[in-house]
Length: 488
Image (cartoon, rainbow, N blue to C red):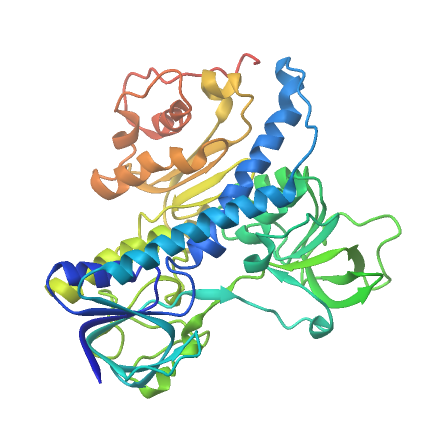
């Protein structure tokens, strides 16, 4: 038996707890079968944003005539783009692996871990070597992440398809691509492939893309992505089949769905449409990897979808076992997992009893334009019968918004007493602009004055946020800009 003070199952954000334990003089172990750093580094947010950076550059070139510049795009070295990004992110994963291997008091087990009792695991090595002796931890952290969800579509077993794991590092850009899934993964990849010249058909079940966002944001993103994709919202992929070296996807209207725009001769009598493409990409969400752990050998309970159930300290229903990251299902973001790792580290190493608080947990979507949100949506407030006030301010309220020809808006939701309930941004640099709102909600009094009273740089896009919060504030005197009466 290999015995440790702390065992972390998963080499992503959870591995930080192992290194923190080692810094305390404790013996720690990490069990991981894949690249170190978790899905974000090699199969998710980092490589996808590196690709989207290229798409943004292409967009700037195409828009150059709007500002009097004569620029042309001579070509795209697609294989060079993907190979350079692949090399970069996998080198980062390799460096993290070497760091763990060289760390004192941290043992790295390269393989898949399975519980044999509540805090003991066996490891199936990835390299085919003989398995090590069972690994036992006084405290165990479950942080095994998630993987793409494969939906039950008729005919899928007979066709080749891509997931978000596969689509990032293709050697060639497909001429045409059918994407099933209208959430943030489908939207981001639809933007990337469309911007780089592929004919993209994007199929989403809801009547708008990214339906979990505030309604105004979802509608704006749907309209914006129609510049890059043929959007078929309100439709569901019912079947697929191979045809002429590619694939045909049959998409049917969902209940109460309008189905989006239909080709003149593309609709069947039942309202279904057939979409042809060279490749098929499934972007239908992710599922937790808890089914690989043999959790039935423990007291760790999961819900019907396999997500681990925890209390507010992130301890599971099994004493001495904590969980974080994508296995929780609530906040499937790398920054959320890093925050949860800090909470778990405090509770595992210091017995701090620290509780997780996600009320001010932001997120972003890197389409064009970007989306960023924190707090409640208007629909959530209405469903909760919560009294609120709302204002929406376009980007051209700020002079830099006019200069950039920025399309988008900032929407603020606040209680009558000024408490910030939510903020939703769609436009350039949205992922950056949201941060001052997060700080106000997390570290300030959480009121609109926390954003509207501090001085904002002029001219900067942060003035759009300032102007939106100023409209809901009780400030007697306003110096917020308003350039909506002029053109850029």
